[in-house]
Each structure stands twice: as structure tokens, then as C-alpha cells.
Length: 386
Picture: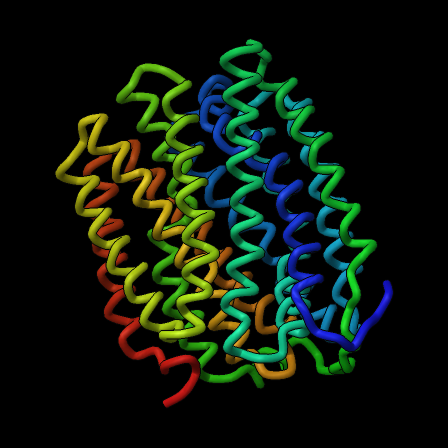
């Protein structure tokens, strides 16, 4: 890859383009997964499993990707490899005929998430000034979410207007994802020093503020585990249609994409902790809202507002990790993504099991988790400082 010392937003936009095309493909798949799984005989627990494993199991590879990028001093090669693997396994999802097979290949597809930590480290390497990183991560997250919106709108077109079956839609989604590989060749990767530490030494030497923040983020993730999949399923139950859940998911994506950009910019100015506190508290209030307001109109409003939570937390958490990551940025992002990803599995399992018992019970549990995360966030050091 070409290297250049000048630090600007070029790499951020190129990485954003890759994420955009990847998410067009990914999010063409995401909103129809609950219907695909239940259509093959899966239950709410199976959907919860898919959500947890999809967001969590492959994140173990994410950690190794970050650590290896520190060891090699290379970032972009791991980003390319991750997108390539996602394309391959996305095609595989379309050929299985059981809900167990869908969950398996959806998990394998997420092995491609090994790209995330090197990608975030590359953004951090490119943007040297901490007070500009929130904006950079916000731009990237916004482009990522725009891809999600486009993917959802395409699903609505293919599923509703053209009456394409789910397998064919997933094949088309896989083809769209191929375009995510192209921008990587134009990245100007800053030269980074190789950090030759073994895996355990790298973890041990991570900043203590980072480790505590990962704990807090993990508690939050236990409730915010990929909840939108179960919300899509609930929207179908309330409306009796497939179209409305897809529209609501598109609205969720639009809201989260807008908030991603502006929450990153805002965190540069008022601090990461303040912005995150707002996001965590809002999630707690929304969980309470899902308990007490269960008609379709209020549910739709709450689903859209959940996009605010998603946009704020996804961007600002990454910016905070960047601030306290030190020299081992790949390892720091990898450890963060790995731990929160594994918690995703537990979150999906617990919520899915509670869903099969009672929808309200699940949100009582999520409210308690959200409240606990707010309390733990109080003790996070402001932007890594005392």
C-alpha cells in the first residue's frame, strides 16, 4: 500500500466507502434474517442466538486482527482480508436450508470483523489530534450507517415490489459487498512502528482507564446486544406485515447515521463522557418505554429513537478507546471489540430466552442492565483523565 506522512481525512473517507458498500450487502441481509430463521423453523431464542453470535462470536478474530496489525505495523492488509472473508461467507449463507446452518454461516461471515480493529487503529493513526478523532470516527460511522439505509431500502424494493425470494436477495447482497474491496487499494497508510509484544503482555500493558471503560461498555452491551433484530420481529408481530418492520429499520438507520456524525463532532467539543452519558441514559428510558407503550404507534417512535442511542454510542465509544489506547492502538481496539463482542453472545442468549417467556420481562431485564451501565459510567475518567 502507498504510504504518505500527511494526515487528513482521505483515509477516513476511503474506509467509509468500503464500510458503505459492505453495509449495503450486510444490511440487505440483516432485516430479513429474523424472517429467514423463523421461516426455517427457528424460534425467538434462535433469533437471539443469531443476534449474539453475529455480533459476538467472530469478534474474537477482531482482537487477533488488532494485535497482529500492531505486531506487523500494517493495518490495511487486514482490512482488505476482513472484507474479502465477509464476501465469501455471505454467499455461503444463501445456500443453507436450516436455521442452524444460517446461524453458523452468519457467524463465520463475522470472522471478517477482524478488519475492524486495524481499521479503527488506521483512523487513529491518520488523525493525530485527539480533538479531531471524534469527528473522524463520526464520518466513518455515518457512511457505514448510510450503507445500512441503502441496503434496507433495496430490501424493501426487492422483497415488496419485485417479490424476490430471500435466498436471491442474499446472493445480490453478497455481490454488492464485493465493491467494498476497491477503496482499500487507494489508502495512504501512515508508517507505524512494529510493537513486538506477545498477546498477554500487550493486554497487561493496556491503560487501566481503558480496561475499566471496556468493563462499563460490556455491561451496556449486555443490554444493547443487537437489539434491533428482536425489535424487527416485534414490529412484524404488531403490524402483521413484513414491509413495516423493514421501513422502521430504514428509519432507525437514517437516525443513527445522522447522529453518528454529529455525536462524534460534539464529543470533540464537550467531551466523550458527557455524550456517552446522554446515550446510556436515553437507552435506559427507551427500555422503560418499551415496557409501558406497546401499541404500534409508540413502538415505532421508540424504535426510531433507538437509532439515536445506536448512533451516539457506536461513534463515541470508539473515539474514547482511541484517546486512551496509547501506542498499541490495534490491540486496544481489538481487546475492546473482542470483550464487548463476547458479551454480545451472552446478551443475545439471555434476551432471546426471556423473549420466548415474555416480551415485557425481557425489557425489564434490559432496563436493569441499562441502569447499571449508567451508574458504572459515572466512574469513568473524563476522556481518560482524572
